[in-house]
Length: 340
Image (cartoon, rainbow, N blue to C red; front, side, top):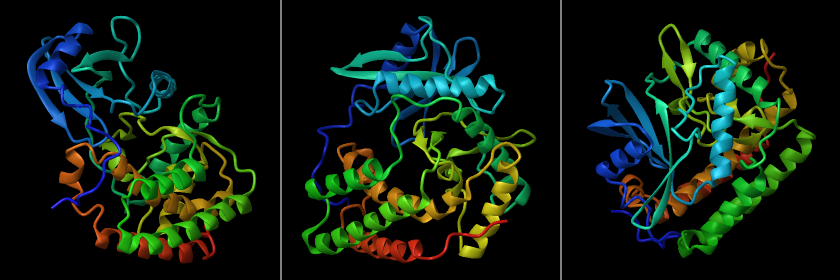
């Protein structure tokens, strides 16, 4: 049973987004469906594969209401189009009849933003294969080579305030941490955030650039003979290059060292890499853990979340989070991975 928790939102905003409403919104944008659509797996947004009368199929993404502004989404779209123009495997949004890539529709009083992209399938990459890791390294480096050419103006920045202090405060102020676990979790959280702050200070003046931002294996699609591609940049942000590399690593220290070496072998063919960023891997992992808990809390008003994450909010969940944060404190005190 899902934990009985407060909600930071009154509802998910998707109540009016029925299949017919999706088809009507696309028709108003000049895309005529044949009546068939399939909802794809996505917690954050609502994503549909829609079959059109001309026999083709597109993917329509309806953004979570209130999450991004028009300017932030259009900046994401511009980055995707910029990458595609450089022949980097990125599926960009399609222009709608008015020339924009961003559509708008109001359903039951809720303003929705949506985009439409070509359908593109793939599978998860095989991260135990050195050739795959090197290919991924080259792919990400090419994205970063474009990403460093200009800066985001509206997208968020990956820093300790946005991904650490604010999520911590939301969880505490919102009453999501049970009283029995609050003191222990808060102490562990404060300790790791202080250590993260120190790690970024020790790293010095690290270059920041436009990133994918959420480059875990589930967000990379692989096609035989073509390699990796992305279908969107929903979490695109400004941050250090290592953010798009570390989530592709897993296992023990030896295994992660091997994986990182292969990734960098490919990466260095297109982009230089500042090895000071290696000391940010565990701090970035720590920030992701705290931010993930806050992400669940912020979405608790969406019925999909209590169903999918019933353990969230329980004493056992927060006890485990406290333990993991303490482990991260130890991990951040270890020497950075060494690659050559």
